[in-house]
Image (cartoon, rainbow, N blue to C red; front, top):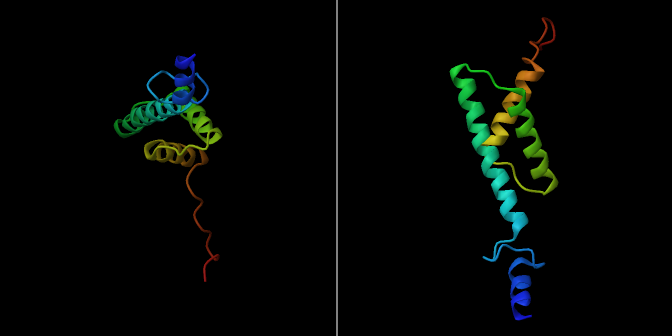
Length: 102
């Protein structure tokens, strides 16, 4: 009985991993770590002219959505890569037309 009470105090609901770290937070940290690693691979591929695969983009977007659902911040590299990918999909900014200026 005392063991169960100890586990509940460590993990909140008895579902902790025994070392005082709540499992959902640890899993979210792992998602952030893996998303950062994938974003770094995508950035490297862009820099050296290698292809970026749809599966990589889908995985990054999925991780970003999960982080949003959990109100967790995106790691800076993930934000940078997804922003750059969104810009490349949207295409270049349109140039101002002649006569639109002051």
